[in-house]
Amino acid sequence: MSAKHPSRRGPKKALRRGRKPKEGRPQEILAAAFEEFAANGYAAARLEDVARRGGIAKGTIYLYFKDKEGLYRAMVRSLIYPALGTIAGLVDSPSGSAEELLRKLISGHYALVVRNKKARDILRLLIAESGKFPQLSDIFHREIIEPGLSTLRRILEKGVASGEFRKAKINDFPQILIAPGVLATIWFMMHGERHRLDLDAYMGAHIEFVLNGLRKRGEHS
Image (cartoon, rainbow, N blue to C red; front, side):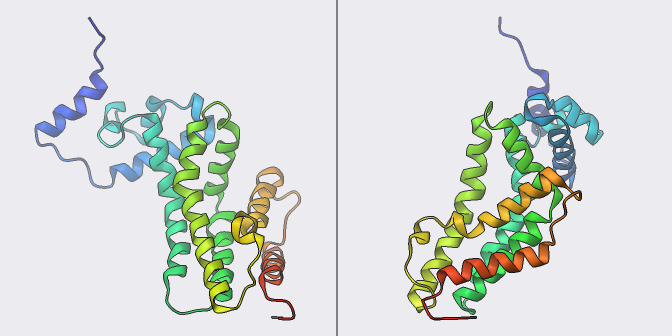
């Protein structure tokens, strides 16, 4: 006889009986999950410890999330999607030159990701755990990186079409546009405040470097 899993069956029974999930509970679980994943890593994190941090029963988690991977996926989305949506929304605006959009995107990346400790903690978790759990980096690539690269490509295409930017190999590798921001994030992860970057000046140099490489020859800011 196969073993039964009360924690998985319990929530389904509760839903069949018409008990409604508590409003706001998913956000509380995601906050507790972030604390647990950030503190102990993906491999060591346990749903019972997430429940303990959230002050709930372990079975309650299954009302909202299928398993630990599903909880992790939702946690990443909750932390990164608002930033990604804000940045992508800039590109959907009908006004503004490609250069203006790129400036806003890079500035948004610094404000919403580089300066965001939770975003840095997620990246630290990915670097530490992706070797053992490649599905974690696959989730991040599919749901975060690919949409971000798509946004960058749209800006480059707009710039080339408008004559602002020259056609260059970077159009095939838009990752390069944001690479200094990723470096700044890793810098903070490694050094914290011990070797502090002047992020405002660094971001200005980043934007200048990128735009000087994209503009047509002879054009200046």
